[in-house]
Length: 593
Image 1 (spheres, rainbow, N blue to C red):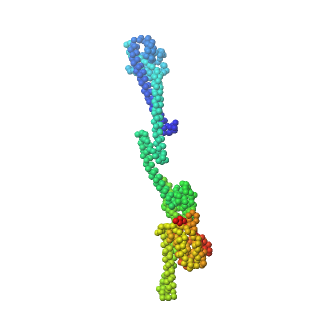
Image 2: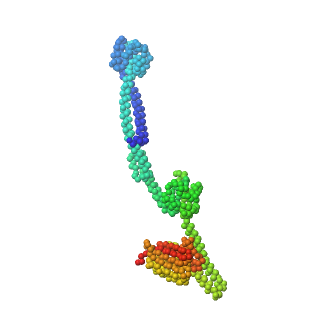
Image 3: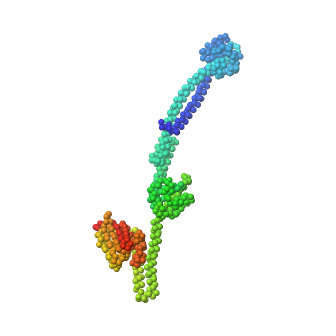
């Protein structure tokens, strides 16, 4: 049976068997000794009574007939009968010839009888060569000296009687032992099953979260233990629920973090990393725990940071560029991470990687922007100040130059105004705030015609022909003012950077997938390929001298790019140096109605 595989059950059963067997064995020994003693006392008492009765018969028996009388009485009382004179000589014996028997004066029972007592002795008989129980008394014989009457029975009879009782007791002990073992088996099995139920419940506390309580089946110590386990299970459920909630929150927070998080142990093996870190280094989304850091991170700087933190136990902050992250810059904050000293003495470290590439780029853009704005504003301001000082120093009275100086001041002031206006527009577009006017369906042909009227006079002065034959009646959604401003900037650039007798071609048409394509192509000086990627930056000029000469602010194309992106579109540019440039706008179309 499966129950016999339980060590506790076997120990309980074996202990019960040993204890019961030892108890029964000791009890049998004591009872056997007691019963033997009682049996001996009973035989001695019987022999004493019979000896006293027979001692009354002996005085009437003649000395010559004592031996016959002894044999007759022996058959009657079932005992050996011996008559001894005061000197110890045997006068008669029921089982042996008195002439051949030795003197009995020194026999213990004979000496006790001579002293007037009832002589009792259990010893080995040299005459019969066996153990006998003797009882002897003295009695007066025919008015002469007292004789000794001794009765004896073999101990074999006592042993037989005691053996019979002992066998009966042995059978009773076996029955009692079997009954005790049966009872012990029942209680041991029940006790073991309760222990197993408690053990199974305790082992499954964490695995099953103790969803069901353990019913206490008795009002004893095990029942109290079951109630204690139930209380502990309830506390464990609460603790596990709190830990699960905290773990889920932590996982959600770490997973949602844009920053990469990496934790290692004191052996430089990864214990945790979130998806952001795996994405940064281009590793699979799930990095196995205990993976050596060297297998995942090849950058020596990050590994050195962890070594320093593990060695010193102090936080560390550094800026690193990770080759595995395409050279992006990170501000890495590393700190020691350790379990409570009462739980473990092993240390680890955790690092948070903040991607500062965009911040550095924005910082560079900010610095460039400040420098460019300062430069752009300084040039007209310097001109205004210089000519104003010249006028104040006497040129105001010079009719040949005073008007010219004032016109220059006016032109530079207009340039300042244009720069300020474009900066305000660009700032508004970059802020992400919605336009003051709601987006509306716009007919591209109407917006283009308005933009063409704005630049028509500049084109006439520059000798540039405007061609808008290929403009279809398509519709887009957006701000009319912003779209017209973007088109004016493109047309203005196409005119300014064109050659004499050049041409600007404007086209608009619907293309597949609900999009509208607007292109502005010129036959001007073109843009070098190395400048194409930067022409949408603020204040970037391909030909700085020519741009300032024609009054450009360096912000027009940046404004165009932001306007198109706000319309959920995109802008492209292609150019052949010396042949011309083509700007393409692709924006979502709307239904004309």
